[in-house]
Length: 220
Image (cartoon, rainbow, N blue to C red; front, side, top):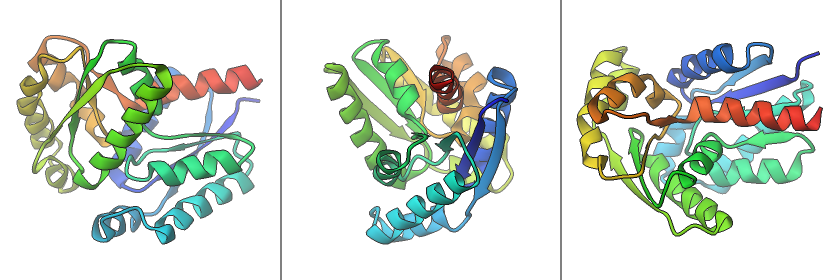
């Protein structure tokens, strides 16, 4: 039987991109969904990743494990340290949203650009990137562009404006060896950004599904 993968979401706009990525790159996986729409606004309101917020993330991971999940994939990029705590505790694979994408980016060069749309996630993601670079023995540096208004447009149902705003910001990172779309929700702008830059960009859903499938295959 194919592995059961629990997907844990903090924003609704992340669900469709990861569902599509599994359909494209690992359709046999048995995916389940946990969605707490209070996580993202609470994370933004608290500013930092508090102990209480970390407990909430770990409780969700524990619940997913209790359902029989073989692996857990979080789809929101603002909770990295809490997800790492869950990964250390649980006997199953727990994957942060962007770790696989960061690994791919580090293999591409030392000048990495990232287009982000959710400000509270940026500091955590940049710290995760530095940790990944250090672990890989790389001196790569990450340059982030925060695209104002894109997330609000997407949450308001205007994906076209979201994609346009992200694509309009992309040329600021043309000098980079690799360009990343920071969040699962941002991946829907992939085609528009690639048109703006004239080359491929990396997205977290595709990288995460590929990495999770590889890890599950190794375990099986």
